[in-house]
Image 1 (cartoon, rainbow, N blue to C red):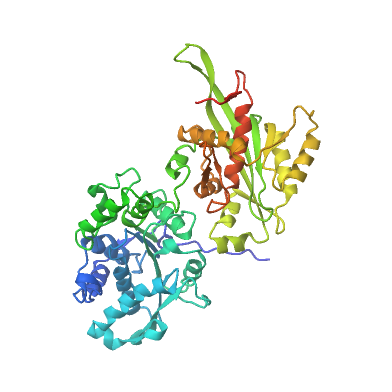
Image 2 (image 1 turned 180 degrees about the vertical axis):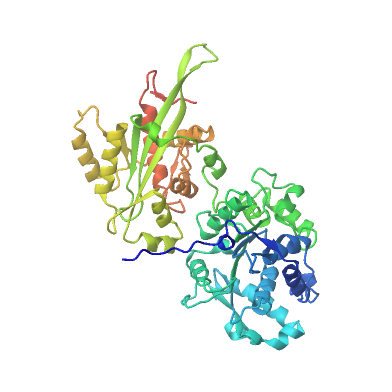
Length: 553
């Protein structure tokens, strides 16, 4: 068989090394196009479009004027994010019309899309009104209201609306996609279909125009995190255009100096008094405060008040090499939950230090840190379908090694048993705490194979009620807030931590509540019950627990 000859990519064709240029002609072209349009809403309605400095200099000029040596546009994807009411819809409508009528593409297909048809129609309605109020566009375009479509006759191009709930989403050849409010997308299917449909175009452009969301595991969260890395120069991607106006979580949310960070249109598009009124309403209302942070300050938040805020969880990640834990003393926690869902196996490694008691002057033992390793399992057969249906990147986590797919449509207990046996071989595994749900057969097999005497069992059943769970749940929180629970920022565990809802009884006992939690929390449960045994088992000088309960750290 003859050897395949590979063509060496010329330097000018390699986007990582090719030189980029700024074309003033193209920059002026898009800016002048906007100046011929008219606003469609509010006090500006009917007036010629007046671009704000940030719209012109920070978005339109660099986005459309940055080119390769052959004159084609560099940017293929853009993530544009500001707080609401900063003119994102009208900006998107203007871009859609420019790509339809002035980008020089024959047979161009332009799409505006969103989570539902009503949201997707907002950009179309603004574009439609812009065409109707411009004599030149009105003459050359045909508006088909019933189909939410605008046809540009000179190039046989069209612009139409499509939504994530549409039944038919294939057969596209998109030149431009404007995805409005990407943060509400239920899954990534529509974005992926439209993105892959652009490959045949010479210089396509996909733009997400959105406010912040509350779930970073979504397609919007993924795009946001990527944009952040490009802005921070952690990733070099000359085809990706990021523009984000947001406040920092450390900023005082009720301080007027903070508001402008997320609202570049403050004082022109947005009235200062309106934001002041929102602040007054949110001061004594946590729900309204969460909404204010997301929509007005463009902060990524949680849909519910998290048990442990994500910033505190990330701060406790810790840096460690799993290889250095080989042979170390540890304790296991197992939560099998539903056999057709996600199972969690957690190893907890406690490390102690001797400290001087300030009151007695005597040395005593305290927890220095606790390291947790997480192993997750999922049925392989429907994993990809669930990823699309639920909007949870199980398939991505599996590819990255954070999740183990097991054959079939239910979790393989044999795979979990093998993992536990392997961990017992390479670590000094003292015991296995387990939630009894669905676990009887597996733990009995493990107990039989361990061959321990009855007064020193390997497997220990932990009931999910307040008496058993409150102590280790509180300790889990204390260690996390003190940055002593090192978890390595495992993305599956981080997702589950963001899902947790906590129940409390009259005595202020607490425990994770699976029924109230918004999604899976099996890793959290397994982590807590493994921590329980770790803190009950003494080191050289004794454990954290005594007969009276939990000692305060």
